[in-house]
Every structure is written in structure tokens, then in C-alpha cells.
Image 1 (tube, rainbow, N blue to C red):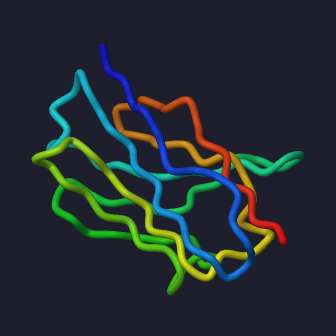
Image 2 (image 1 turned 135 degrees about the vertical axis):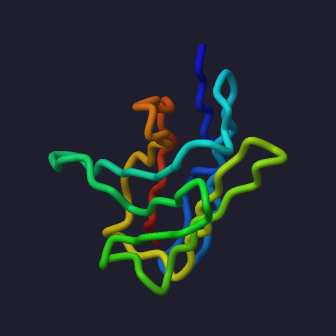
Length: 112
């Protein structure tokens, strides 16, 4: 049974940084594209970043140049480094595999 477990969320001031992690189990991690989505209150869930099994990346325009997605296949983990955070980045962040597995989400709040 596949399981994705996110960690690293929290409260940070505008301009600050956070690093999210997503540990996967029950899947052959290296074979699948992995991604991060987010959902703010009252808004639809949106794609933030995705990384293919080969390491190619793609980002939402709103986070380009500020966020970096990476993966460590030896650790079955995908990361999202978030820099220069803004209040509008406040959301629940979800880890995703293109098997359609989802994590439980981790809250990121950007506020002074």
C-alpha cells in the first residue's frame, strides 16, 4: 500500500524559507513523477511543482525562481525548497505521485 508522508510545514515570516519533505513507501519511487500541490482556503488545489522520474522539473509561474523541487531516489523522498515566501503562498501543501497517490498535507503559513 502506497503512503506519502509530508513534513516541514509551519509558520514563517514573509521573505523566509521552508523546506518540505515527502517520504514515500509502498511504491517503486524512482519510476514515478512526483509533485507538490497546494490548496488555500476557498481556492482550488493547484500544481506547484513537478519532477519527472528523469529529474526534469516544471513550476507554476507564481513560484518560478523562488521554489525548487528535487528528489532523492535512494531515500524515496521528494523535497520542495521554498524561498522568498509570500503571504499568498499560505496553503496546505500536498505531495503527489503520478500513480495518483496523495499525502495528508502539511500547513504552510506565511505571516508577520
